[in-house]
Image: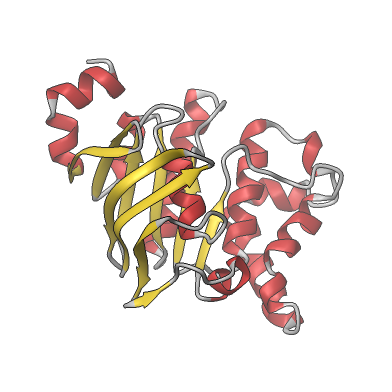
Length: 235
């Protein structure tokens, strides 16, 4: 289990996340809902070791990850797919994907198998494997970002705003792929502003406001919560 106990995170003198408690069990999709600046990405960066909490603990199967270097956290099976994709735009699609398999760099046959699995999930990427990542459409770039994360064989994938800037049809397809990844055995912590799409595939969720968790519950409970619907679903 991945578990955050009373975690607080600062940016300078500003407390961006305040005493939050989150858990993700194996096999779950858990969604973090909230507007920009609510604390979702800060939470991801704390889990990934990119921003050390000022208090609390982040546990992976009872091991405290606070202070563990980011590369070791990746090796433990927690991999973040960043907001905005963060691709190497001048490198080819395949080069970007292979970068995600860096932890397996000494096992070339293993990297090749993982690459084949990504291409099976996203066939368009195989067609465009020699094209620069920056030349792709937004939806295709998001496929590369998710594929790159998959190359590290995550046990827990942190997906930060995967639907950002995508057309509605592409968003629907993207969430179908996220569900497929989860069903293959990867637990997912998903940060999203598209609450309706996220809650349709999630098991549970947490709602962030100003760095605090104000509501949590099952996906069904959040979908039926009038305040959540008004704030994030528009109905």
